[in-house]
Image (cartoon, rainbow, N blue to C red; front, top):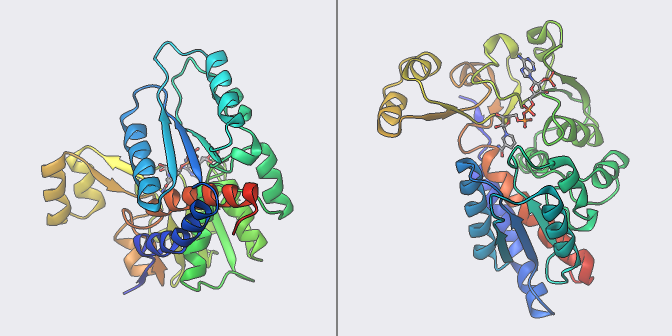
Amino acid sequence: MPDILNGNRVRDEILAELKPRVEQLAAQGRPPGLAVVLAGHDPGSQIYVRNKVKACAALGIYSETITPPDSVTTEEMLALVRQLNERPEIDGILVQLPLPAHLDSKRILLAISPENDADGIHPTNVGYLVAGLPGPRACTPAGILEMLRRYRVPIAGSRAVVVGRSDIVGKPVAMLLLHQHATVTICHSRTRDLPAVCREADILVAAIGRPAMISGDYMKPGVIVVDVGMNRLDRREDVSRIFRDSPEKLAAFDARRNVLVGDVDPIDVVEKAAAYSPVPGGVGPLTIAMLMVNTVDAAARRTGIC
Ligand code: NAP
């Protein structure tokens, strides 16, 4: 059986290490502060924001959720972000995506000052990432590297293949792996013979958004697989096909009318991989943990404490 890269365990370790830093910051001045802007009514976003606020409360980080009215304009969002940039008790600002279609997401994200960029996606911070300079890193990619480090997965000299080239996952995780001396290939929807490229990987990162697409045919025996995908299956026949009629998964579907699956075939990966991150319980829990890290690091940089 392959080893499981347990994201819940890694998250708990990261948060336990952060707690004394938060206490020190609070004792010597004020706790770190995170502002979350939630516009619109996306149910997924509402759950994510609730979990982020809960994580702040558990650590002693001050948090504030701002929910602008449906009528909010891009100009008003820009003004809101600029006001948050000026507030001394706010170290991190996060604008929850996706924003409603009438808002200009790019302009709004650019308005967050790089120092307050809790998500690590501002172009200035992307530049720091590429240059290997300190700064907030995109949360999910940073969490993946933490997981690989804590499980002592050898990266230097390995062949890493990243499927997906998004700004929030694919590109930054590829750059982080490169900084750790992997030989990195980035794949996307135009890559020719994707299974053959993937089979070269010692470390295979799937960040695609297609349920169970990465089958055994994409995996070299003994590969380390990191599954970033979060796909909700809402058709029983898909659950039945992907999980090969697993009675547990079908019962879970019958109870909740949906089941979560990654971008990697959950049965094939058990047969082929040396280690893999499951969905759920793999990469997912690390994103919020790294958001907390970015917020505490920002407070530390600003105050010069810890
Ligand atoms: P995205 O912006 O939609 O990017 C998907 C990437 O996959 C694109 O680069 C696309 O290629 C590529 N792709 C799509 N179909 C392909 C195919 N058939 N063959 C090869 N490549 C293909 O997605 P994302 O935001 O990076 O998210 C990816 C997945 O990770 C989603 O399931 C998302 O829910 C999940 N996610 C999880 C977390 C977490 O906390 N665990 C965080 C973020 C995202 P092109 O560029 O050519 O279109």
